[in-house]
Length: 114
Length: 112
Image (cartoon, rainbow over all chains, first blue to last red; front, side, top):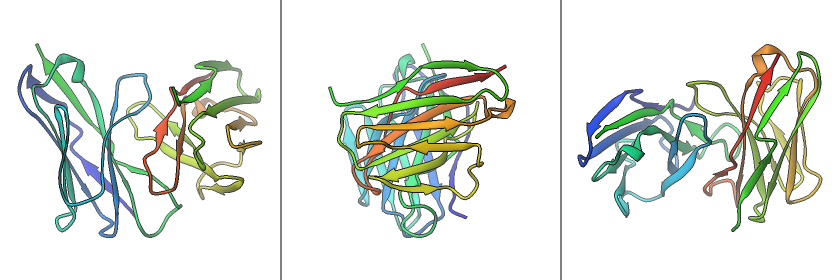
């Protein structure tokens, strides 16, 4: 059973702080990793994709991948109230399951307080 | 702008009355997916098409069917909706299986 684990939160940070979201996955052969943001009642919106070990930065967002530890994280710098949403970690496992089956974590709810 | 479009955005149906949800894409992606998402849960894959090749998840109920008449369009048919089928239905596309999946805005289905 391929699994993706996230803390459900809620994670509460003050405006302007760094929010750190974490995710672990069970399939060691996984190659593709994604962070989606989902506002209440809306569909998931891609924030970052990462495929190689290390950091990937895009504006205020940094994704970090450590395949040896089977760990992927998302840092949000200078958090804004508009960042308040549920963040879904998703992984495409290399082996088993349907091809392209995006395995989602249950999501971490982030609340940024003004 | 290239995008994934879903219609309708909101659908209300009666228990047992068939309903069809549609998805179209201008991304020219090979793969189209249908997910079901219930409140406070992660999206659950129902099935996908790679071009015209269909793959049904093992635990997708027979009540759910799909059609992909061409590259751009994909439909989700729910033959006899039950109260438990009330959910957000998400369509997503990707170029290849290992590529990023892009989601449409979703269709919120209510079953009365």
